[in-house]
Image (tube, rainbow, N blue to C red; front, top):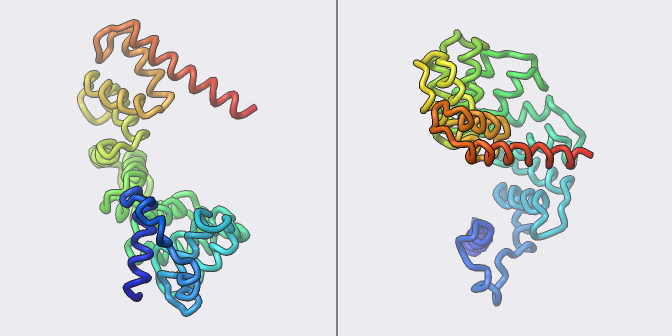
Length: 267
């Protein structure tokens, strides 16, 4: 990749991230589409991936999933790991191409074997659900573990459930709690709620209503309806928190408003 093209791409990415003010580039194009296309057509895998992203997002050109798939495929065939992952997502969802879970599996596997955590997680989910591949809980655990060890919260959460339910691995509540906690500490809402319920019921740990309320509150603050409703009841009776009817009413109304909004959106 030549220096001009690298700097052009870098400035484009920085603007998207909000780290570089677009105004300062008003007299100079941030991203030269023609040059990127020329690079892509010459076989440059990074440029092909970028072209796929441009058509995928529709920020620079009108959104065109078919074109995105075309460019992702070119880059994926050259081993570009993120192109392999994005192509798998398009195939799994049927964006710009006929839905094909088997082909999606192939590309998730290619990206997973290169170490991409998101691909490892999605590959695990395919094995977990038997989607595009025969169900294999042990292989699901294998790939969830790889992604979890790279710090991916949804993989941590799913791995925790595997340990809790003994799916693909020997049942182990201590390991389940370890991974629920790891995901919860990274802000994964369902894991926060689950960890709260574990402390509330004393499932593998001593009952600790204060710790339970702490995690349930975090999930409630993130907008999880079940956590908001439960937190309301905890404040109402003073279980794990000081009794506070006003707080109870506040969290009840927040949960109620979400339920009402959900109902309206489905009409």
